[in-house]
Length: 86
Image 1 (cartoon, rainbow, N blue to C red):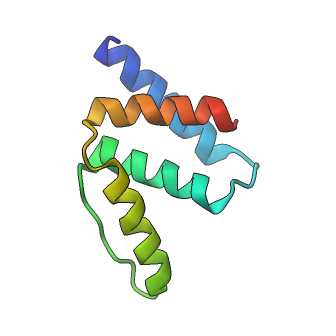
Image 2: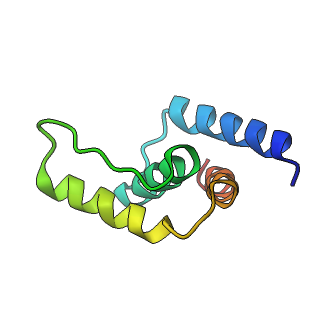
Image 3: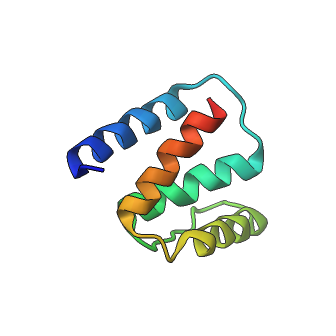
């Protein structure tokens, strides 16, 4: 897929997911979180002050599951997940 097309589809999918009033199950939210981070910030994790340790552990686990993906693969997976869950 052309990079410009992929980036546009990814941005559109992110916008739709972010603006959705739909309540996603926690595992789906973690999937979106990890794919977005991998697509935009490549293998980074930051602990938010006041965030429960269990939440951080789930986020780290989700990131570990996608760490071998390239940025483009993560974008494609995010777009497909958005199509699946919206």
